[in-house]
Each structure stands twice: as structure tokens, then as C-alpha cells.
Image (cartoon, rainbow, N blue to C red):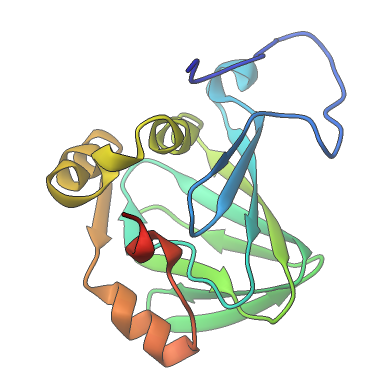
Length: 173
């Protein structure tokens, strides 16, 4: 599978059904702007998140900042020790080196645009879609290190319990 299909530096319109899509269980990823299209400055992905679903374990990035713009639904996020809730039209800033996670805090679908700066981290999602088994068990620490992540996998049960969530990646075979 090609990890960055249909990348073009030419001007174009990306329609609502365009872009490469992967389903990671806990969230979906629709690739809209790859790092190499922006000269490395940023990447842009859309994350659909099912109702009451934790998108990721508690984690922090050493290399990039993330900005989550809510298109639809209600997103909850833990930013350090602060819990915030964002709705359609809200932008949540998750700076590098800050422990954070996010989830769909509602009973309806949630969709966010995730702006990642600088770009490059979107490749993690492509790699996860192409080889999901390399991100579980013994393979997870190597992938985390490759992408400059610290991940608290033990946070999943606590977060699910505290916020009434599920984490579908725990149910993978």
C-alpha cells in the first residue's frame, strides 16, 4: 500500500469524500494536506470519532503542536491537568511537550480538523493504517520513539472509566 497516495503540489480542491482514509478503530483519519505539500510547515487531517470514544491514550509529542478545530459534535480533551470541552467552531491548541488526549464527548458523531505543525506526524497514521500490528505489544515503543511520542498506555482504562468512554483499539484481535 502506498503510504502517501495522490499527493500533488498543484492547486486543487479536496471535496468532502476526497483524500486517503484509514480506520484506526478509535478514530478515522482522512488525509487532506501532507507535510511535503506544505513544504514541511504543517499537515492537515480530519478525524471522525465515534460517540463516547477515546481517540488515543494520554500522550505527548516532542516535535509538533496540534490544533483541533471542531467541525461537528463535541470534543473533550485533557490538556495537562485541565479538562476542556469544545463544540462546533471551537479550536483547541495542544502544544508540544504537554500531556494530552481527546475524545468524542457526545452521543453524536464528532469530526475535527487536526492541524499538525510542523508536518510529518501524519505519517504515523499512514503507518498505523498500513501495519496496525506494529503499533501494539512489543512494536509500540519503537513506533513511539520513531515519532517522538511518549505514551501512557496504562491511562486508557482510567480515562474510559472517568469519562464514560470506550477505546476500540483494545478490542483488536
